Structures are given as C-alpha cells and as structure tokens.
Amino acid sequence: MSSEEKVDTSTGLSRVRTIDNPRHPSHFSTIRKTHIVLVGLICVFNGNLGSSLPSGAVESLATYFNIPSTSTLLVLPNSLYLVGYTVSPLFMGPFSETFGRRPIMVGSFMFYMLFTLCCAVSPTFTGLLICRLLAGVSAAVPNAVNSGLYGDIFTDPRRRGQAIATFMLFGAQGPLTGPLISGYVAVNLGWRWVFWVGVIIAGAMSPIVMLLPETYFPVLEEKLRERESDGERADGRVALIMHRVSDSLKRPFLMMIKEPLLSLTSLYLALVYALQYMFFQAYPIIFRGIYGLQIDEIGLSYIPIMFGVVVAFFIFSWFSWYHEKALIEGKPWASVPELRRLPLAWLGGPLLPVALLIQGFTARESIHPAVSMVVPGVLFGIGYSTVFLAMIIYLADVYKKYAASAQAASSTTRSLLAVCLPFAAPSMYGNLGVKWASVVFAVISALMALIPFAFVMFRKHLQARSAFAG
Image 1 (cartoon, helix red, strand yellow):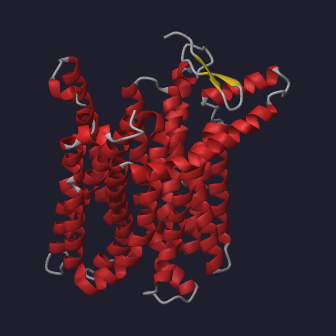
Image 2 (tube, rainbow, N blue to C red; image 1 turned 135 degrees about the vertical axis):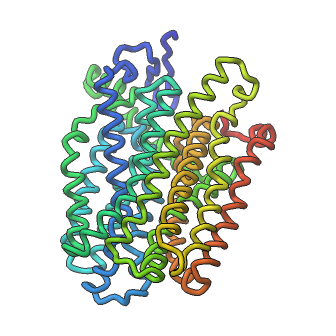
Image 3 (spheres, helix red, strand yellow; image 1 turned 180 degrees about the horizontal axis):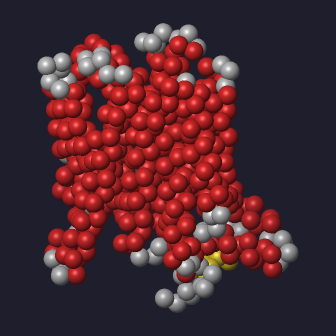
C-alpha cells in the first residue's frame, strides 16, 4: 500500500493515514497489542459489572433507606446508571477521535472508580443515585471506543472481528456477574460492600489500564507535528476539534432518521439488551416469589445465561472459520456481505422467544426451579449473544466510514429501552403473572426476529436508498 496523505480543508492540517508508516499502531508488537486488547476487556467488564451491582442489594437498600420493597425507586440505582449509557456514546466516540483513545479510556476508568467509591460511602439515597448516574456516564465509554481502539491496531478483518467478539463476550459477562457478587455480599456484609467490591476489582486492574498507549494514528501524528512546529498549529487544531465534534454529534441523529437499516437494527438490539436488564427485576419475582429462594441463591440463576454467552462465542468463532473457508473455496453465498454475519442472528433470534416461553410455562412450584433456570438461561444466553454479535458487527460492515456514528446511535437507543423496561417488569409480572408476561415478551421477540431475514430479502433496496452505507 502506498503512502497516503489527506488534508483537512477546514483547518489546513495535513493528516497521514497510512499503515506503511512505522509509527502506525498496526505495527505494534504482539505483546503491546495484547496489552491494548486486555485494557479494552478490563474496562468493558468493569463498566458493565457496575451496571448490575445493586441488583442483589435491593432488599438491603430498601431496609437501610426505609423504602417500601415494592417501590419503583429501587429500580433507579440500575436505571440511572444506564442513563449514562445513553449519553456517553454520543460524545466519547467523537472525543476519542479528537483527543485520542488513551485520555478518554484511562480518564473514564478512573472516574468510574471514583464515583463507585462515592456510592459506597453515600449517606443518602439521593446521593447514591447521583453517583450511580455519573458512574454510568464514565463506565459507558468502552462501548463507544473499544471498536475503534481495536480497529487502530488490527488491519486484518478476521483478527479485528475476533477481538471485537471477545470484547462483547466480556461485556456480556459483566452485568451477569454483578448479581452473582452482590447477592452474597449484600446479605453477609451489607449494601455498601457491594460497591466496595466493585472498587477493589477495578483498582486491582487499574495499573494495566494506566499503561495504555495512544493508538489513534491521526492524533499521534498531529501531536508529533505540533511538537516539531512548537505549537504553531494550535489555532488550526481548535478549529478541527470544533468541526469534528459538531459533525459527529449531528450524524447519529441523522442516520437514525434516514437509515431504516440502522433504525431497525437499533430497535431489535434495544429489545434484546433491555430484556437482559429486565431479568434483574424479574428473577427475584420468579425465584423468590414462586420458589422462595434467598437473595444470594437467586444470584446463581444468572450462571446458565453466562454459560450460554460462552457457547455463543464458540459458535461465532466456528461460523467465522466456516465462512472464511467457503470464501476461499469460491462458494457463491459467501460473497454476499449480509451472509457474513446475519446467519448468526437467524439462529439466535428464535432462541429468545423459546427461552421466554419455557421459563414462563415452567415457573411453578410443582416443577423444580432448575428447569426454569437452566434451560431458558442457556438458550437466552446463546440467543442474546449471537444476535448481538451478528447485528453489531453487521453495522460496522455496512457503514464502514460511519460505523462509529452508527454504533453511537444504536448504543443510545438500546440503553434508553434498558432504562425504561425494568420499570415495567414488576407491574407486568405482578398483574399478568409470570406465564403471560413471558408470553408477551416472547411474541414481541419473535416478531423482531424477522428483521435479520428481511435485511437479506430486501438488501438491494435498503443499500440503494442509504446515504451512509460504505
């Protein structure tokens, strides 16, 4: 590949963007790349772990702050954290392309630790909620930046896809680990120690995060030129920053309005994502209300979902190998872009309503709790993860240049629904019962599962009317 230099006409700054440059992060050593991948995994795991930390401490919080156990106020520690997830992606992705990956990733991780510590020492419920919101804003950053971080160092699509899949595996395990930890900690040590454990876990990993190098090549080059020119380009850099931020903030909203492919994908992912967080409210209703399990025992009910997530990762790896083999052999189907990712969603989509129906119809005293815990949990974990992997990477494949904006729009949409749906869980399961509430969600999931099939059927029409597809 020959060297390529582009000039930003709005600022006059020339920007080298070639992987031939020996300073390009794609030339980092294997050890250095492994360290960068590890930092991304640490950040996303801790951030997503924090999203569900209060789930097992609901009763402890209710007792300490004198809140009725049926009050929707007890949903707020989880939901306000996710409000941060609706805000951060819209800003932090563009900021990482302006100031670099390192300050955004390292700074956000430190702020996550700080605000989680503030949760642990908060004297009031209001103070706890404010700290949870700010912790969520900080914790959401890896979801907006990690794909770009890995794209900086991996030019091979297969290695980049594998890194992103691993990142999503760790991201999915985070919120499922939260209730497992908090259930035991809250019962034995109290709700404050739930957050102290989160701080301890993050603190133990923080030295690895602090050593993250900068990986965004344009920022590296601009800093080098600034040093060489003794800061003479400062005015141009300010103009560049303002121009980038303005465009980046507008683009996700425009894409959501004008791109049916993006809006439908975001809607489907929003449902899948929100269902996971709804379970944090529904599982205590099911396993404590019907079977009388203790809070620390309910945390174990998330292990089957975690196992399903791991199975989904191996399914993804196998299908990636199978597709690559078919491509080398010249199989016609392998050259269809949509068939590189969407078959995984064809598998996972139907598993979600099946899991919900099995759980709804087996959650009764006459049937052992393991039946409504293990089978639906594994199926949901596989379905949730395969749909997520397929649709998220599909967006990156389709939009290429505008993938960050597409991911920001999708992340904001799914986080909004994840904030709202858990509020409906207590009333739905209380008024309709576990069976019929599960049926309602299963029907909605089944209808949404048609979306990946429709993308293949109408792919030419959707791509033709797209102004942003690469």
